[in-house]
Image 1 (cartoon, helix red, strand yellow):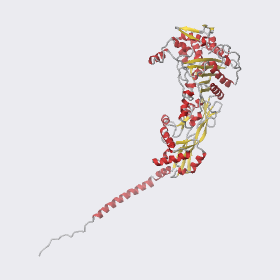
Image 2: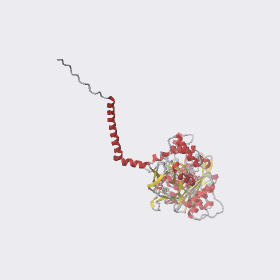
Image 3: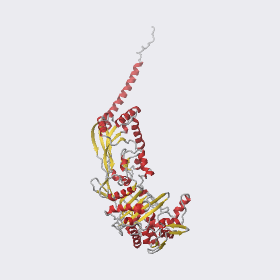
Image 4: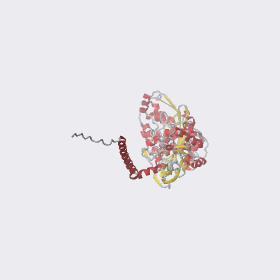
Length: 623
C-alpha cells in the first residue's frame, strides 16, 4: 500500500489594507482620548480661569488721572486751579497693524478733525517718540461739542477713538507769579525711569517746573480707573464697577498777592529786564518774587509750536522763561557796602567814628579809583559814607582787608556764593571771588581771567569785579542784617491742605546760619542806610523822603561790560526793627535811585498800605 505525504492546506491570506486601517484606528482612538482629556481639562479643570480671561477681553480699563490740587496765595486766593477739557485720543493698542487699515483710520479721523492723514500720523509718531509705551495719542484738546457728539454717535465706526474728560490747569490771576507757579506736562519715559516709586502711568501729568514740580507729590493725587464692557466692535455696552480718583492736596504759598502784583506791575512798566524779591525778615517767607519779562503760564496747557518755544528762550525778547530773581547772577554794586562795613568793623580795620577824606578819587597801587562822576564828599565817617555812598571810603576798606579772607568770609556768612535753597528749581550759586579761586581760573584760562591783585579786593568791597549774586541772595543777606544775624532759608510753601481745607502740614522757619553781629556795629550800619533813604542828602531821598514809614535802604549801580549800568535797590522796613526786606534790580536801568528804587517803593506801599508824598529837591549823591 502506498502512502502519500500529508500537505497542510494553505490558510486564507491576510489583507494588507486591513492592517493599516487597524493601526490608523488605534492612533485615532489615542488622539481622540487625548483631545477628550484636553477638552475636559479646559472646560472642567481650568474653565473658570479662561472664562474670566474671556470676560476681561470684553472689558476696557481707562486710567482716570486725579485732579491736581490748587495753588493758593497766603490769603487763600486761587492762583492755579483746574478746568475740564474734552480730549480726543487714540488708543495705541487699537491702532491697526496693517498699513492700509492704519492709513484708512488716519484718513477718517483726520477728516472729522479737519486735517489730513499725515497730520494724524505725525501726532502718533511724536507720541511714540516722546511718551512711554502705551500712552494715549492726544489728537486734540478742548474738542468742540459737535465733534464729541458725532464720535459718540458713530462709536462703532471709530472703536480706536476715545473722547476722555481730562483736567487742565487754569490761572485765574493771569500772568501773576508765572515763574513761581511753574508748569505741568505729560509723563515721559524718562519721568517713569526717574520716579519708579511713584504711581505714574502713560497719559498722566507731572509737575515740570516751579511749585508744580517741587510739590508734585502733594498736588498730583491718586488716579482711579473706569471699567467699561465693550462688544467685539468696541462699542460700550455697560459700565462696570470703577475706582474714583483721589484729588490732590492744595498748596498754600507765602505769596502776598498785593505785594506780588505791585512788584510785577512796576517792573513791567519800566519795560526792561529785571527782578524783585520781598522777604519776611523774621521767618524767611517769600512775600513776593518776580522776573521780567514774564510769560503766560496757560501757554503750557496746549501743545507748543516751535515759534512759541523759541520765543520763550529768545534773548532778544528778554528770554521770558528765565527767572532772573533766582537764576540771574550779577554784580550788585553799592548794595554790598553794608557787608563790607560789618566785615571791617569786626576785623578792627575801622570803628564807627573812623573818618576818611573823600576827595572824589583815590590812588592805590598806582591805580586811580573814582566815585561816580568823581563827586567829592569831604570828610566822612561810616554812617555818612553809607548815606552818600562814598566809594572812596569803601575802596580803602577793600585795600586794607586784602591779604586776609575777612571780606570773603563775611560775604560767605551772609550766604553769598551759595544757593539759598528756595523751594523751586533753577537757582544758581553765585560767586565770591578769592585769590585762590581767581589765580586757579587764570592758570586755566588766562584769556578770560586776570590774576589776583589788590584791585580785585577793592572792587569786591563795592560789589563789583568778579562778584556775582542773584536778587534772592541779596534779599536773604539784607533780611539777615535786618533781623540781627539769622540767615534764613527762603520758603514759598506756607502749608498744605486737603480738599476740605484742613491743614495737613506747615513749613517751619529754617535758620541756615547765625552771624555774631555786634549790635552796635549793626546799629551804625542801619543808621547809615536810613539816612541814605530818608535824609535830604541820601542817595534815594527823592524816592523815599516822603514815605511815611521809616526805612533803611541802599542804592546800587553796577557796571556791566558792553551794556548800560544795572540799577539796584535794597531796603528794610520799618526802621529800626524791620519786618520786610525788598530787593529790586533792573538791567540797563542806570542809577539805582532812578529805576530800581521806585519799584521797591511800590512794593512797600502795597505791603504797608501807605502812600509816599512827593518831596522837593533831589538826592545829594548820584548812585
